[in-house]
Image (cartoon, rainbow, N blue to C red):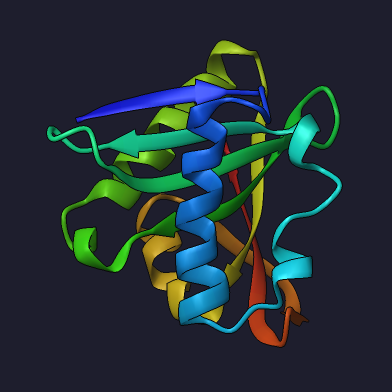
Length: 144
């Protein structure tokens, strides 16, 4: 397993991230394709986890909100690779990157079905439930 990082939206790494996101969010969850790709792509740091067979399996992106806070977004693991701790691995890599860049906080909007997953990783819910792309989410954050 390896995790590669890019800001280059023309790179194969980024294109792998988009393919994973399309399968999970657009095809599985019914998120409109025009909402899945947004204006923050070029401002984000994209992470892709590759299996030992070099297959892209999971992705996440970090969007800087200010000099101390990243927003973790677009976390997705392909169906065939769920239950293998790839989600935890890629988030740990994103958190390590954020710490190396001297960021202090990571925020995210978790789908309600993923809230327990994020809480086990140390993220705490705050504020009220909100809708994003027709799916209930909760705001969460973690101090690094």
